[in-house]
Length: 313
Length: 325
Image 1 (cartoon, chains in turn yellow, cyan):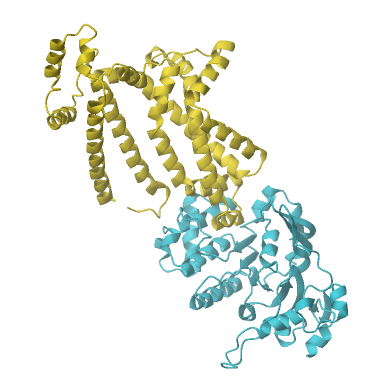
Image 2 (cartoon, helix red, strand yellow):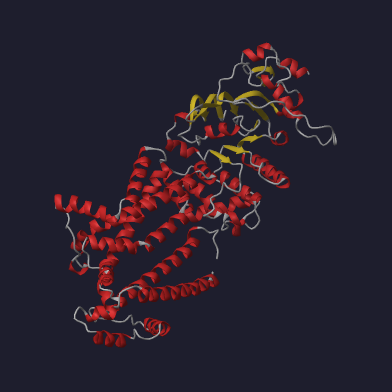
């Protein structure tokens, strides 16, 4: 186990180095000259050259990379070209709405996704199962922004039950915070609920036909014990895998959701940064998100041993 | 009478057909006796067991007729909740596949303890002590360590012992053993058989022993029923059955058992033909197409089970001739 964790940490570092190279190159090689953008419409060629010199853009790429990587390792993600503020500070200002939205989305997706999956598998072929299958297909295929606008129209514009958009920080009160997050969370969750429910249903269905389920029934176990005690843990590995994947892929959905609902989070920050070619912000966000992705994957792999005693590293 | 099954009929349904898996069978199990249920694969042995415990899949199987009296109560009329109280407590079952019939993600001890906890008010720790005691009873070495083993850490024979321990944990009055030794090595088979016979004698549990192996029947059972195509074709004491089989099918089964004493003889005789499909209604005796004794009446009218001796019954028009042959 210890050697496995060590090995995984080494491979995590290797992955992060590759991500670093990619993030660095992606933006340097893309069209558009940041120096020209900073200088603005009235920038003279001399001004642009001065800015290039100041940002070190004239150095050879490998030298630029080493400088960049070293400063990131020391916690310095650079300053925003556009606002002149430190990248890390900009990101941390925007972190709360994004983290709130992500956590609520994961809670909603995991709980409802798994419950739907279990019920559908338990009554496979029945009415509930068929309704859930239709719902899951819809949840898969309708994009977040369509669901988002639809929900806004229904629950905010027509019925005025919920705010149209915006965000309230949690220290302004739990109620306003939650009310503003309901629609975005539901919009973002539908796809994940569908995804998790489908996988949960399939793996539960497989487990329910196993011999040991009949043994449990022959013991006199109740339906509840059969489903939640005997079946769920056996179906756990694939379910954990999709939860990990969903969580890791949340970033893309968060960006769109924050735009639709006008939430000032990291997603909006990065969209604005891309429009402004604000390289340091884009790079900072990409690095942090990749690190999170890799860590979640590691956590999921390690959690398998908690669910299935046959898995040993 | 512990168990009294009357005219039990179970059908399986699929989109295009109905399979009459049990065509109205009746038999009894007395307190403390061992009843053997013999027949080829697909003859309805396991379906009988699963019907008694009501463990067949609800969507595809239905018991369409008959009664199952256990302690005077008809199991088919009980609610699901009442049925759960009987399963594992008064009627327990051992399955064929020890490799897959234990839950891989819980320790063996916990799975035995679960049976105890379902049917008594025992606490977790008391139930775990009982689990350890049961493992000792089925002669697993170091039971205090083995309770904490997962199924994959045990051999097939040991797992089957654990399954037996689980089945006997609540001292059931009836134990249904569905081919409990079929999936095991020959040497382990003998050990498990001896274990079941020993435990049966010690606890006084009645056993319904389902097998296709006549050798197992001879070693363990007092009474035997022989099944063919969803019906009982012969019913007798084990001694009578082996001495004077009254149904041609039973005779065929006995001839196709290899006999050490006859040495390396000629080719082992087999029963020609195949088991009839249970999807179409059968006219006449279901064994007639494969039967060397078959005459016209066999193909026209289904023979009922009738007495051919004291507590010896057979469903054959020519039982007397068969016994004399």
